[in-house]
Length: 296
Ligand code: HEC
Ligand code: HEC
Image 1 (cartoon, helix red, strand yellow):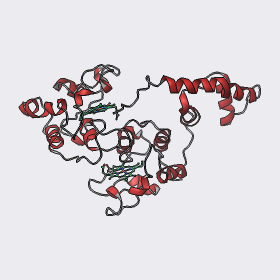
Image 2 (cartoon, helix red, strand yellow):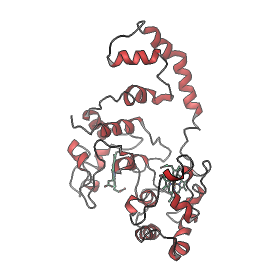
Image 3 (cartoon, helix red, strand yellow):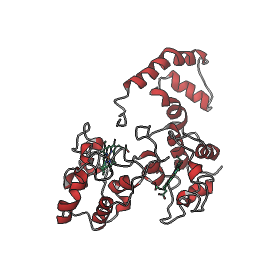
Image 4 (cartoon, helix red, strand yellow):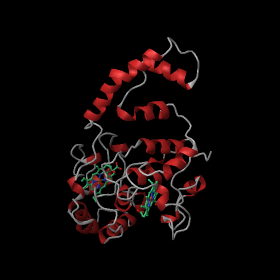
């Protein structure tokens, strides 16, 4: 199985884009500009920024990040509507509305209607009912963001593997009971993280990829090989121990990253985990949410 590529390990793609842009597009753009842009239109400000070298060119997503996201262009709902109706919009797979088209739970998974603005904002209407995001807030850690960005664990596990298997239920109950370092943890729970094929056939142990607080080799500096590591959480070196991302919230499995990553499939179902988690359209959709999820 191929692993998702880290930012650092993508020099060739990025380097190539940079070379292309440096060699052709930027000088062309500069040459085409008037000596000084003095208006306050978006295009004038961009021209000034390019002249002052403020527009950084990072790979082939530069247009979205530099021209749309950084300038906080208002994202019209009509674009979001198009995204939901378009195959491969967030990575290979059918359009979202094929499977989420109405509140009818017999015809639409989770009674989730992604075909209308009100439906998107209402979220899942089947129990457990839930909204996908809070308008005005970053949806990255909310249901919408998790379903578009987070791969189910162990990485590579197929969506047809049940999410209520005995090991998953045992972890859920351990978190519900307070996530203590008790006999249950020592005898039954810890080994679920360190044993291969626990969460599906031919799946690696969690600790194959999360074995220490150092990345590389441990993804997200997450150490699932000890109780202390599990409770410390992710990115404790990059963010500092006090700001590490907690992956266990005692008493609250639904809010615990470990549980979420065991039961939530990335959308569209079956998408390869190596597909870009920060797809430009995902970022544009998130921008629409952060701007208040306007329906016009
Ligand atoms: C081929 C069918 C299919 C497609 C296409 C699909 N989904 Fe799903 N989706 C499902 C199924 C099945 C579930 C429920 C099972 C699960 O939780 O994984 C689900 C669950 C969800 C949930 C979780 C809702 C909740 O209450 O937890 C969200 C959010 C979601 N999908 C969004 C999307 C988005 C956005 C797209 C487009 C990128 C998409 N889906 C495409 C089948 C699909
Ligand atoms: C083959 C490598 C691999 C295996 C095995 C694996 N993971 Fe991961 N894990 C990753 C990668 C890569 C990420 C980065 C995010 C993503 O792809 O969604 C990640 C992210 C996570 C996160 C999110 C951390 C954060 O920053 O919030 C959690 C929690 C997690 N994994 C738990 C587990 C659990 C539990 C298991 C075992 C059931 C497991 N992982 C098995 C590679 C792996």
